[in-house]
Length: 586
Image 1 (cartoon, helix red, strand yellow):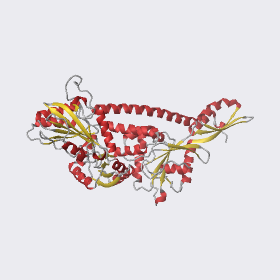
Image 2 (spheres, one colour):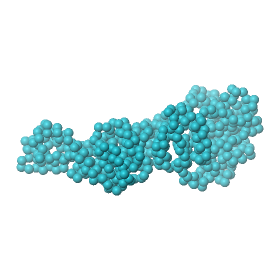
Image 3 (cartoon, helix red, strand yellow):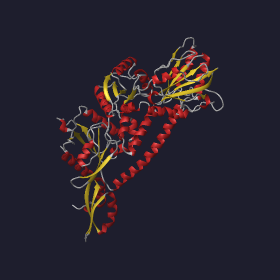
Image 4 (cartoon, one colour):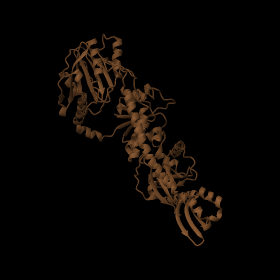
């Protein structure tokens, strides 16, 4: 979106105004209160025009406003990035004084109090060069904390940035404490369907927001710049203001440019569906592995949405040590993200090796795995608790389970197996999450039997079931035997719209005996106890049989050895083919 220079522009050439507009592209380092090259550019233009210039810089180092005044003053603007007027604005105001005097005036200090700037700084400028700089900060009860004027090349940048943090801590801390407990007011915007918006509302509530409005605009093709078009964006801005919204959540994945453009029009924080889901995952992650996976997914998503303006203004001044392009903040952000992602992948690989060792141990002992999979909030964890007597965390919210949880069980025929609860699926599941949670989701891909749990109380059950099928196909989990389960049948009349599905209620226990029987029958087809009887003449065959499964008993008689072992059907058939059916005791 267009970024304009404000203030008194009378008599200023268009080329100078265009050059000043380039300041919007400048990004400062996080620990740089006032970069020297930016200061020299401000001094140069101040000398050229003999007018004051003010720039407003956020804590992230972004220039959000550029204004020009007269030779005596510049209009200091109320530019707040916080709704709470008792907190600091998150913006520092830096302006020039053409008369060479770097001291702050009474007007400057009044503006600091009134607009709650992070800091107010004045740069004395003479003949196009900076002289002295003075900065002031807010203290308790709106007192002014002010240093003596400093020579332009001796600014205590780090100390001043630390003072901003300290001022932010002490100014209005009681109000801040209350504000932390306030719920964000969210407005939803979608282009697909009301059903999708309803699910987005549940996601927003799960993330801790209060949904105050939801709007739908049917579009065949999203607008490349604003996703919803300029006219609808202006209307949405008025709706956000009327509803006093803090955040606008879009029901699709937005590009970085779309987010930036929308925030400039709406004047509230803009979040897309993927960011919302990532935020929920960040809240829910409990294990070390889950936290690593969420952080990796967030960085993968952020890395593709860094917006920069190339190398323009990466170095604005000349002289020894300043020539050449250097490294822009955008490039440093990308480099730091790449380095962190590399470290996270290394740590996740170490965790995955441990998981692989546990899998091999299970395979060695021939313990089959039954995985609970399904749409988020379908009741998988409640079902696990009911079947195993566990107390896994259960809540009526989306993505209550992020880490794979396994519990050991036995069928009525004493065939042991592991029942594994997995992370729930959802429509438009972010690819970054699928990638980061690959090792956890592999529990479903590598399971021997899948229990596909559907929410029988949802009017969207079949669409949700289709989503589960799509994610399973993406994971390569399409070959395993399946048992369809329709849960929450206690909440009303639920039609068994999935052929062969077991109707259950994890809450009341209804239908669980039938489900346990179906699991046992399915495992019986795959794994079952088999008793071999081998005479002493075939004693060597025992060494081939034992590693294939879990030995239940081994008895020696006068005629030979009797071995009972839990064995895969394929291994049993192979042994019979090789040694004959006589080795199996009827």
